[in-house]
Image 1: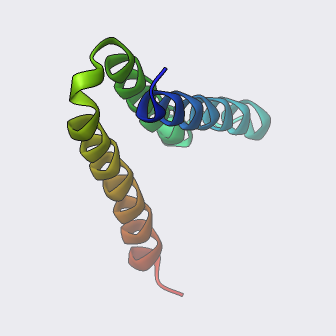
Image 2: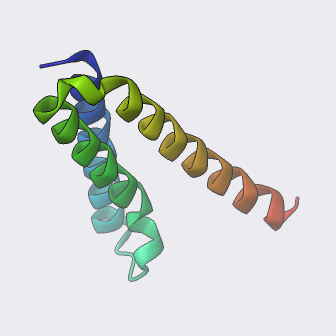
Length: 84
C-alpha cells in the first residue's frame, strides 16, 4: 500500500469513527455532527483510489490536501462567524 493510500485511509477512518461516536454519545439529531464522518469518507475514497492507481499518488495527495484545507477553512469560518 502506498504512503498516500495508507495515510488517507487511516485518517479517514479516524474521522468516520469520531463523527459517528460523537453523534451517538451526544444524542444529536442534527446531520451537522456527522460532518467529520463525511470528510472521512472522502479521505477513505481517496485512499482506495490511490491504492488502485499508484501512478496518481501526486494528484491524489493534492486532492487530499485541498479537502483538508476546505474542512479547516469551514471550521474556522464557523468559529469566526459566531463571534465571542
